[in-house]
Image (cartoon, rainbow, N blue to C red; front, side, top):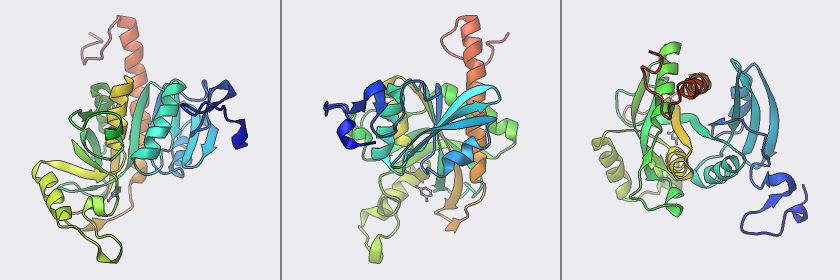
Amino acid sequence: MDKKDWKSNAKRPELDGNLQYHIRCRPGDVADIVLLPGDPERVPKISSMWDSYEEKGRNREHVTHTGVYKGVPLSACSTGAGGGSTASAMEGLATIGAKTFIRVGTTSGIQEHIRPGDLIISSGAVRYDGTSENYVSLNYPAVADYEVNLALIEACERLGYTYHIGITATTASFFCGQNRDGFGGYRQSWFQDRYEDLRAANVVNYEMEAATVLTLSSLFRIRAGAIFTVIGNRVTDEFSYEGVEKSIEAASLAATILHEWDQKKKEKNKRYYFPSIDR
Ligand code: URA
């Protein structure tokens, strides 16, 4: 795509047919429910578990696949690492019709009982992401949608996976933001204090996108949640890249559960899902 083809409107660059600047997808390219991994290579790992899929966009860190899983239309779009590119992807996806986001990724636990290979479902996120404050005051909360979280819990129970529910700390940096030394042993005194304060406040894990996803989703009136495979524990200093597929499986299954609940809500003329809706 030649850059000169982009419309001259710098406020919101789009191509004819509403092709979105960052994700290079247009209306009709994505399903209502979109999984948001950070890593572009995780998109084919997700979609290869589905019954069928097609690639709809590929640009920079954003790869988008749309397909069908257990009869439910689904998309996955990679956000890249960190809030900035995550916000750009979400802007494009919301513009072309996404209604629900499920962030799926990897994380390190900062409480001892969070074991590598476990899953974490975020109830909310501490907003050290650096991007969501470009949208709204830091006093505004980053909270997960209760329906998305209930569907994630239901999916983990059906799959028999060990999971924890808790508050996530989203940081703009994998290294210094997560109390790791920067290059050459670079440190600031507050790195350790912030880590200890998060632990004392019962925050369970570090990652880099959830606060952006949850905050912007509330602003956009979109449902969102986040689920992670634990690959590290900062208290015990363990790191193991096993079980990454568990969060992918749980997120895809949760999407089908949400779809079923949405149908029930429609049938019963209810705005919100509740456990006894079938009775
Ligand atoms: N993702 C992060 O942001 N930090 C970790 O330690 C692991 C995954």
